Length: 373
Image (tube, helix red, strand yellow):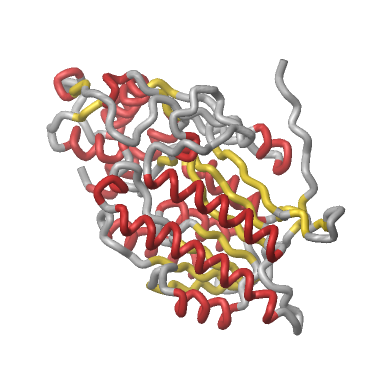
């Protein structure tokens, strides 16, 4: 029997005429979110903050920024400001909060990647821990500046990750599951974000919502993600490595579904309440955003290859089997990710629905156009 999920009370937020900070834009999810906001809002200001580092091809971030500006030009009533900088720079973060008096903050800035964290731990601590602490402190002190129509930050939405579930063998992964055994530093920093946000919500009554993303993909995505790096190798005639000998399942989530989820969550903040002790009940929540239909990795690869042929990235007679190499599991990886998104559906009326063929077709067509194959 399917367990019913009780709906929780949310404070509604009208995003129009609001000042919104999106960190990590023009990163992959951030750029798509900002473009969605620019299309949906009638008035207001959106500030994109990103350090434009070279973790992957900087040209992709510049391309996404160009796409944002094109959308912004079509909606002159909403102002878009791009600021190059890092959330680890406390004075920059504080100055932005002082200048714009943000109503809603979406923190997507983070050093991503499970495998990269093994050899580059320092950048994860700087961005994911220190940087997020700076965001929390700025939200906390936004209430010191309340007045003249400004109430302080009404909602902090931040990116977590399905990686927090580690080697959890119970599937699908539920927000109620214990996530105390991360198998990578990246996962540990994301779990730390959830703990920090919860404590700040309790201490300072900051409405905060964490979102655990499940393997996000789509056009102009991150080149370090498997579907993208595999495409580049296949297009170059190279072999792709398939880890754990293909015995892996992933809950792939198309970027438009992720953005829809974030957009809805932004508009519904955890309700502020006072407990029996006279202190705030933490206005805090965490949700999975995942497709809910984990795909076998080999099936996913086959679909990707078929769509790459259809788009003309690969030739009709491409030798798929000759370009596959089955290898063992990598450190920090997990065999299965599988989202239970019932809570998100109960509270926001949404669950991801875009299937992998549709998503990979859009990616393949974009890839063909962008790289001019």
